[in-house]
Image 1 (cartoon, rainbow, N blue to C red):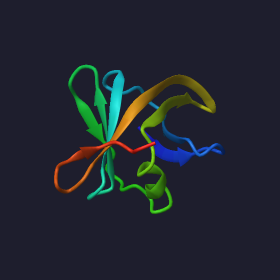
Image 2: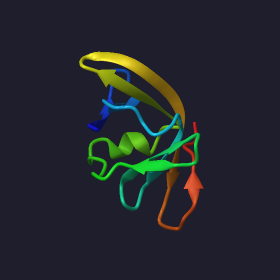
Image 3: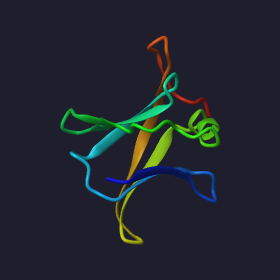
Length: 99
């Protein structure tokens, strides 16, 4: 599976992927200490994206409460989820952006 984080022209953060996940994404957790994204599914499983979040995307992730997850087939979007987004820091606290 190819997966990437992008910020669109409106400043919305999107997680783009090209293969189905193991379940329906319920929410996304950002491990700020490791700069890793974890997607949690309705069946109790999760997937962690192995490559770290790029420096230019990190500030966006520190401000958002929602993230759009889009599966593409070729150049066409075929599935999308607008999911909750939380951050988890090294002290093991989960936080949400304010405003």
